[in-house]
Length: 330
Image (cartoon, rainbow, N blue to C red):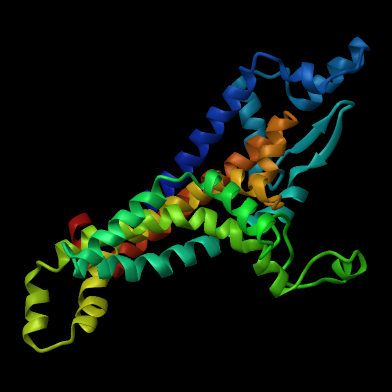
C-alpha cells in the first residue's frame, strides 16, 4: 500500500462528513416553516431580533454552516432549543445514548457474523445439494422480512404472548448506585434479556446478506489452484476451508459489515423506537418529532463520521487480510 493511501482515506472521511452535514444544514434552512417561527416566540421586536442573532438565523446558509462547523470541531455539538430560547446541550444526550446504540450494533454484528460464516462455508462446500438449497431458500425467506416487521412479530409473540423475555425497555449491564437507588432494571442478566429481541430483529436480515456474500466468494475461491494443491497434500476439508479458503473469501463479507455499521444506526432508529431502547436512533426519532433540527444536524454528523470511519478502517486493513488487494492498489 502506498504511503499516501491513509491520507487519501482521511481526505475522503473529511469530505463525506463535510458534504453530508452541509447538505443537512442547507435542507434545514429550506424548511417551509422558518426556524425563527419554531424557536423564536418573543413578541418584542428587539427581543426577537436578539434571539435570532443568538441562534445565527440572520446569517446566510453558508455562514450559518461555518458557525455550526466551528462549534462542532471545538466540541460544541449544538443544543436542543426551546421557545424562550432555552438551550439544552446535545452533548448530554449523545454521551447517554450513543453507548447504548453501539452496544446494540456490536451485538448484532457479532451474532450475524457468528452465524453467517459457518452457514456460508457450509452452503458453498455443499453447493448444489439439498443442504445448499435449504440454506439458500431459508435465507431468501428471512431476507424478505423487514426488520421492523420482524421486531413487531417478536415483540408480540415472544414478549407479550409467551412472556419469555420483556418486550420493551433497556437495562444497563452494570448497576450503578443511581440505578439501585431508583430501582432501575440493571445487571448482565436483565441487560441481555432486554437486548435479545432487538438483536434478533436486526441480525436476521444481515445473516441472510452475509451468508450469500460469503457463499459466492467461497465458491469462487474453491476453484483456485492453491486450494487444489492444498487438497493434494492430504489436508482435511475443514482445515482447507478455514485456513486456506475463508481468509481470501472474507474481503466482501467484512467490507459489507463495515458498510452496515452506518446502516445499522438507521435501522436502530426504528428498532429502538419499537422496543423503547434509549439509544441515539430513538433520540433522532424524538428530535424529528419535536422539530429539534439543530440537534438533528449533530446526530447526522456523528453518524456520517462513524459510517466513513469504519469503512476507512476496513479498507486500510484489507491488505492484511488479502495481500492481492494491496498489490492491485499499488
